[in-house]
Length: 199
Image 1 (cartoon, one colour):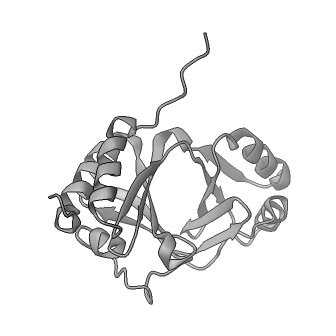
Image 2: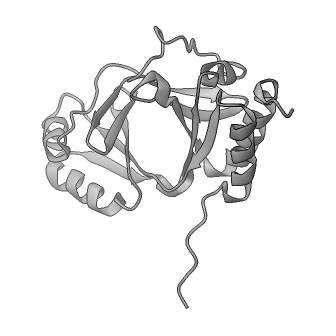
Image 3: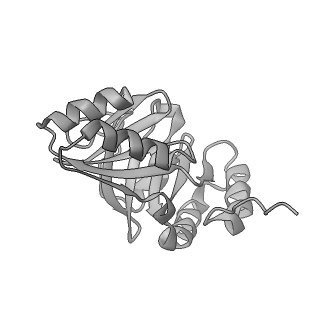
């Protein structure tokens, strides 16, 4: 008998997210995107490893604070002067880690697989910014936090990484520790009540 498909941290709340999306009458879309590959990378941005890793991934690690670089299915988030989060489709952790380490060679580099520690919530739709603004201190106006921007922040009382997706209509990814994912889901659904016609 085949093993059952793995369930994301929010699998038991999928129906609630789907119901809220339906009740918003097109103004919100809420969903979990589980199992994304997430690698935390630490290296000297001015050292040879940075360029070598960029070439190996065909993706230059962003050096401007709170920005995102994308190439194909890879997304690199600036988290600090010498820290990035590489996000990719599920299942690519080992392959990507090997590529990074081989490219860095003898240069100091830290690659930590944090995929299992986090899950991702999609928040999109015309009311996405309004919903997130209920519990986020960032200025989420498109001029301040438009496509290509990311930031570590607090949403509700939860630490998260917020990513503005590649178009305004694509909304946001919210990367949150799996242990806080249910709390954040409850918070989002509560904050979304005013946008739901059946609330």
